[in-house]
Length: 125
Image (cartoon, rainbow, N blue to C red; front, side, top):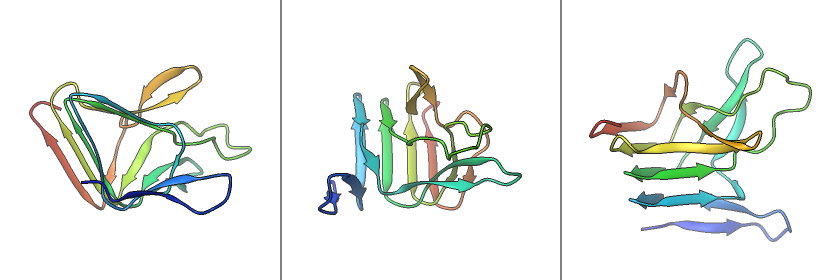
């Protein structure tokens, strides 16, 4: 069940996930912008990415998101999900939420996650 749609009518489209993005034993890559991701101040001048809604479900899978570019002039910015206000479910020891950065794939959950939504970590994730 996907309540996803491309938003706007401008050349810079973004995916508006009002439902669920779910990968089951697969790899789901979102190359364009996701409307539910935004850069916010994580405190102390450090910026991170916040999931503001929608559901991301990685069932023995990887979901790779485009978190965009760092904010101009912020050398401390690193791609990471620091706040969850949506639904995030990781199931299985191979479940990952990643992004592409500096030519490699990095884990978006490598440090502390503030959870203000729903977070499920299942089956060894």
